[in-house]
Image (spheres, each protein chain N blue to C red):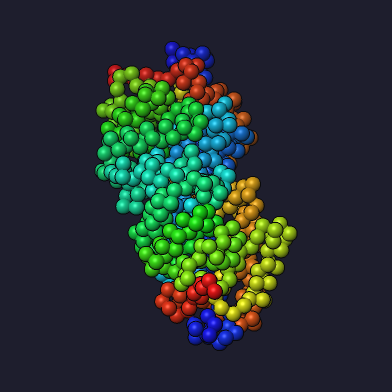
Length: 295
Length: 295
C-alpha cells in the first residue's frame, strides 16, 4: 500500500499540503498569508515566533484554530536592514547571535558558531512562547531549514517534534538541497514527506516561478507532498524588508500569492486528482507519513 | 536678554526645532522621516531603540552624523497588534512589561506598575544600545512622554540627560499636558524649552491638523520652541501598525509629512523670522536654553 492508500484514498491520489512559511515576518506577509488561506489554495502555514509581527498572527492563529498552523522555528535573520534575534535573552544563547544580538544571516555562520545546547534552548523557548500565546500548533518546521546547519541541530529538531508530539517537516529533498546527507542523518523510523518542493532562485530569476509551480501540480506523484511558498504583498514594507535580496524577495512573494490564489490554478488541483491534506490530518493519524528506511 | 539674544540672534528671532519623533517604529516611519529631513523643514529626529526597524534607522544615523538625532526613550507600546518591549531581558525589568513581555499601552499602567529602578535600568540600556550601534546622539526625549507617568521616572530622565551629557526635552507645556505639575517637578536650574507643541486628537478629528501647524508658525514667540511631529507614509504597513488607533494614526502621520515637506509652508519660516536650530546647537552651547526658576 502506498501512503495515499494508507490514508484511505485511492492508490493514484496525490496528497498535498500547500504551506505558507514566514507568517509573523511582516504585516504584508501576515495579511497575504491570511488572504491566501481564506481565498486561495494555501491550507497550512507556520509562524516565526521571534519576528516583529508575531503578535498579529498569533492572535489570528488563536482565533482560527481550525486553520492548520505550525511553528516556523527560526535561527537565521537573512535581511539587510530588518533584523531579529532570539526570544531568549542574548546572554543565554550567545553562540547563535552576531555582535548585535541578531541571528546570523545564513546557515553557514549558524553552523560554524552555534552550540547545540543554545539551539535547543532557543527552539524550545520559541515553542513555549507560541503555546503561552494560546497557539495550538499542528506541526513544526524551520526557517531556511536552519536546523540543517549542523547535524546535531537536526537531531534536536527531530527530538523537539517528538517531545511536543508535533509532526515535523523532514524531507530528503530539503536535506539534499541544503547539503546534509539523508543517508547519514535520517534514522530508521523517522517520518518523512515523500516530496517537498521549494522554488529556487533561478526559477525566479528566469521569470519562471509560476511555471515551476504549474509543473509541480501537473506532475505530482502519489503519496504525501508539500509545496513551501512565501506569500506576501510586494509593497513598500516588503520591499524594505527584502532590500538588496531578490532571493525570496518582495516580488517573488507577490508571485507566490498570485499563483496560489488564482482560480484557474486552484481548479487544476481536482483536474490532477490532488487532494489537499493538512499537518493536523497527520497529527491525528488521518493521513499517514512515509517511514524512512535505509534499505 | 531673552534666549534668542543669548543665542546671538535679535530679540525678535524665533528659534525653532522641528522634530520627528518615532523613528525606528516602522519602515514607513523611517523612510518618511529621512525624506522629511532631506527635503522638508524637519531638522531633528529621535530613535526608538526597542522597535523592530531600529537597525535600519541606526545605520542611517551612523552614516549621517551631521543630522541631529536623539534617543526617543521608550516605555510604552500603544498599538493593538504591533508590539515591542524592553531591550533588557523581561526578567530584569519585570515591572514595566505586561503578561506578554510587552511595554504597557499607556502611561497610566506604566505609572501604576513600574518600579523606578527598572525604568532606570531599561532607559540606560536603550542609550547604551544606541551608543553601541555607533549613534552619536544629540539629545534625549521620550515616547508619549512616558517618563511623566511617575515623578520618580521624571527625575531619572533628567538625571540620565546629565549623566550622558545630553540635552533633554523638558517642557512645562508637555508636563502640563500629561498631568504632572511643573511647579512640583521642576527644580531651579533645570533647562527647559520655552514652548513645546504637539497636536491634539481634536485637531486631527476636526480635520485641522494643518491649521494647527500653520497657526504655530504664524504666531510663534521668540525664544526656543519645538514642534513635535510624527511623519510617516499612510500605507499598508502603517495602517496595520496603527489599526483602531486614529490618535497619532497612519492618516495623521501622512498629514504631518505633507505639511512639513510642503514648499509654501517651508517659505513661511523666513517670512515669520523663524530660525531653525538643533539640539546639537544646544549641546555645543551655540544656542541657549531657558533656566527654570520658581520665582
